[in-house]
Image (cartoon, rainbow, N blue to C red; front, side, top):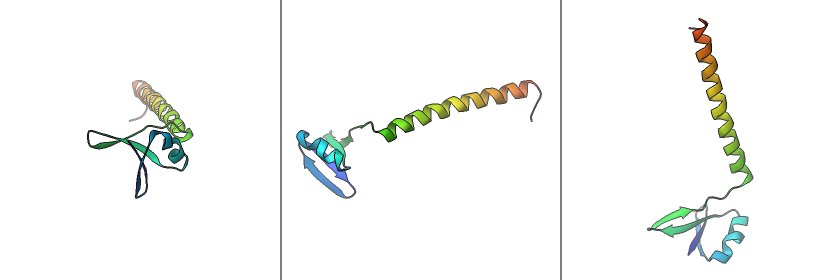
Length: 77
């Protein structure tokens, strides 16, 4: 049994209805060990977020390397 959840609405749905509710903007969850476990759906937004997080980490490493290199040369405080 699956659940379609959006705002304050919660519907019990079958596996056949999952895609219909996804298209209407509902999150799909399954009851496991008395807890709702949401399905992870890869959308354009989640792909973009993952790409930006990866780029952010790369830039942080690059910035740290430049700061470290600058201090070794006696620049900065």
